[in-house]
Image 1 (cartoon, rainbow, N blue to C red):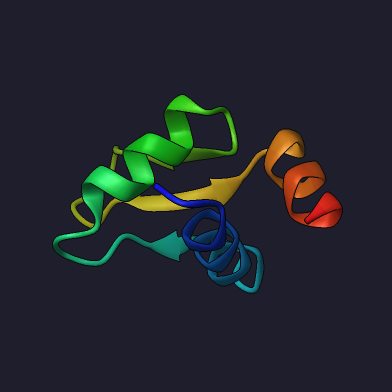
Image 2 (image 1 turned 180 degrees about the horizontal axis):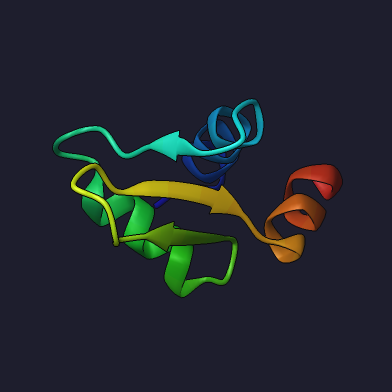
Length: 62
């Protein structure tokens, strides 16, 4: 995923307390999670993503 794509997704997640993962976007969100930028709550039917401190720092520096 390119830096601009990462920043765009992080901005969407950051604007919400918990961002629902849209169908077809699971792979991108899982990549952000593997980078330590978000966490994914998989306990509910609709997965949701939340920023980590590392994600906030990444977004703040770019």
